[in-house]
Length: 324
Image (tube, rainbow, N blue to C red; front, side, top):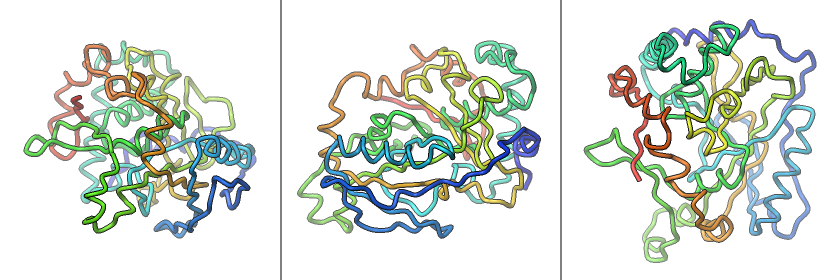
């Protein structure tokens, strides 16, 4: 299996001279925060799960995680419907991943060679092809293509939304998908195999070592991770990353045999009742699907991507098309 070209080249970038490690939140003093268990990821990394029952306590826990990891970098958030055993990018979750690597390489190459796409993405503003390749991969990730990145946000309201709204696909029309708001249904809980799953959602706090100046526009290289702030890297013609406060992160590795699992960077796991979250974030327009996944009528960059046939020619590898 051949790793994507940017994975082979990025090791050449300058890295911070001093190395720190992520610090896991072990305890925090609050009557509204309870450490309920330890979650052990598949790689062996152990992280406490905190049950949080008050939104001010959630702010406190997030702030403490950031304080602990000041020397390492920053802490971002990822909303989850269920708790998983790994934090793998989508390209690493499938069998025969060499097909994904080949398709990703071609998609990046074709996008850079497309004058219309490159112009709207302002790729000419980057000094070298390596940066442009990273930005294209990051952009494709945010629009649903399988890459080496995972999606994170720096606004925990958005992370809460992604734990509260579950990704769905339309039967017999799997290329179209949507998000369905979760609610607590007492009748369903009685017959559910795992009633707890119907009551709670999760938020991962993920530390990234981005405490250096950006290499280029929105691109941060650490010893362990590469972070791209798409709001700085892309003009708002590509509206979705800006609407979602979107960042993407990947492991800074180049060996295709190595793991892209980001689980070792998780420093705390938050468990929250979904009825509490519904109350906390409310129902304003800024937290509706129409804003977080704007249609091509508003997100012109999305319209450009939808016009690219190479992003849809493989059944196992294409950008996601959302409907409200």
